[in-house]
Length: 380
Image (cartoon, rainbow, N blue to C red):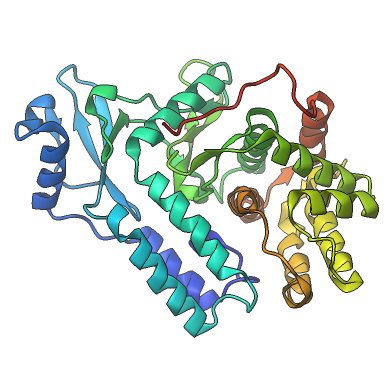
């Protein structure tokens, strides 16, 4: 996630380092691949495939991806986790926090320790590929009737805690679509933002990692139209209805430019303690209004000229100096996805009718307990 952040917040030098890491993760040697596969499927694991490519075609932070063909001839993708990843999370994060504190890469008062606590929990969940498979199936169900999105099917017999096998789907990584026609770039950004809004406000279940390599532009096989292919679901999580209600109220208060309501619901959700100075309250309300203007604009929002990140960044020194509490834990993952969607739209130079997307969601939203969509739980 750090590799796709805006240089207004994180050092450009650090961004280049993370970007290089994102695109050049090391591959496991073949003997380690064999050991991981043996642990999951036994010594004769190759018998389960008509063909298995020993050289991976992709690698990421906790695993690498291989092509293979089943005896039926179906082409599949296997994500194989690096050995010892889960066991090393605590020490890795401790080392990262030490480096970031020493190098002053993050602003003082960023609540890095709380951020690290949340990251530990999320990363450990991401190491469970069985959990990720359950998340994929939930999104398949939620998007089954939507021709604009596609989630590859899971091959259950070839999926374990450390190996996830899915059908192989072709497409173009969305960060490689920068030179596509304007209408295509608008389509990608619009659908990405629409998906975010549906995830948080309708399903209360979100894939929170906006890493651009997790999303591909493909073609619908029969409808002759584009669609977004969703690939990685390790960072999926649910949000409590009460939290989502309060967050919706904050966004709506920004839409109405109602300062008192912004403060009221910000205290209820845990953004503020209620004992902040007026300077802090002013900065907080301005930042919420800046964030909200994107979702509440009644005219198509031109992200090629947006300066949301810079304007919020200008308020950071005040908020870091006067903030009394760290943000709610849920905010880290939610804002990671939302900020990632805005950064993507900016990179694509897209024009998106965000206000219309939000208004439709809001008009159909029901507050409080009601017999609507049930909570989704993928944690066994």
